[in-house]
Image (cartoon, rainbow, N blue to C red; front, side, top):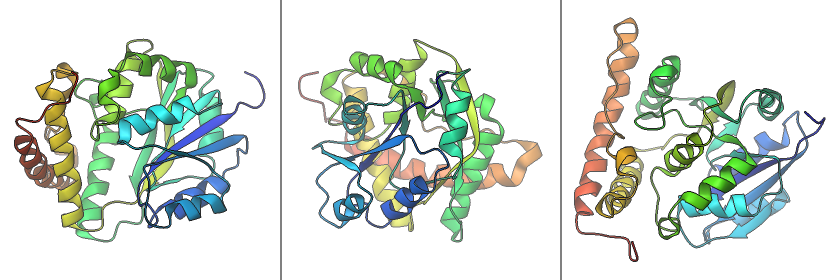
Length: 280
């Protein structure tokens, strides 16, 4: 490999002022310095853009949802690799440096992730779910039915993947953005690696926030199902976790979270029963 690859860090935002500064601070502290930050903002009305300007990020405006924002980020990236980061994630300071080295052997990497400083019951349930799925990651790495999703890719694979995704769903798909991307990339390469101790996630602060977020996922997923888009992928998502007797405590906490999310998700899913995506 050449000595210094350019990494494009893509971060979709919408009213992300609560968490985006911490995300950008974690990028500023990276031991690997050859990267660009591309913010794909959906017309935030808070201080998100002001904060991003402080860090001299490239800002791209996009009126749409997550999958389309990911595509717009890929379109505007100049790097050899792309890191698909969220505005509520915090990178470990050596993460990019270690990822670049691992890419000598892989085409994409999934990032080991835990909850950031979990204190509330909800945050602790999230952390248990993340710990369980990643401890048994081989059970969850398949793009159909799995929940382990790569975030660090060779750029040419992402560009090819977005050529295959139906253009009509790009501005409308909120849920399963990573799953759809991974599904398409996996058709081209199965060289998936793991980056340990990589990222921490600021979880939802309230049950109400979690319900609204997951309800919205249910509605948008139903739109895709109604139009028979990625049926083999979508039908196997949002299932409970198998109980692992060796980690019974983690399994119980993980499935408690999954049960609450299932209520919100199914509420949205059935609310979207008759909704379709125009043009599909």
